Image 1: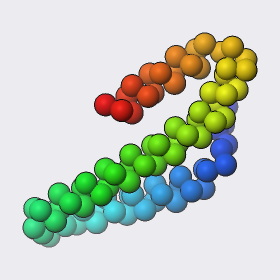
Image 2: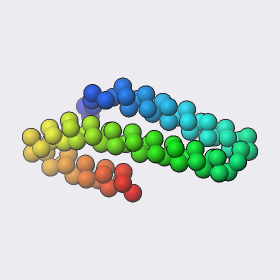
Image 3: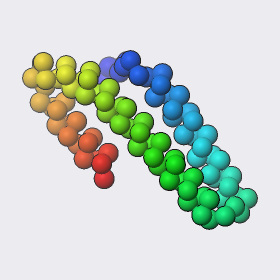
Length: 90
């Protein structure tokens, strides 16, 4: 499999690092017995951040990989995109 090098890679990696840090903070909140409502709010924030980074990855994929696949009439790549979108939006 070839390496995917997209313009937003650094931004995606930075966002993922923040998400990991945020998820670890939620874990600490659970360990420390913090208020359930506060924990649920933070979990919602992590889910939203993951969804947003997923959208960014999808945008990069469409702009680069899918465009190239269409130009090369690569039906397999387009089917893989459909499968990925199906899983992402569930």
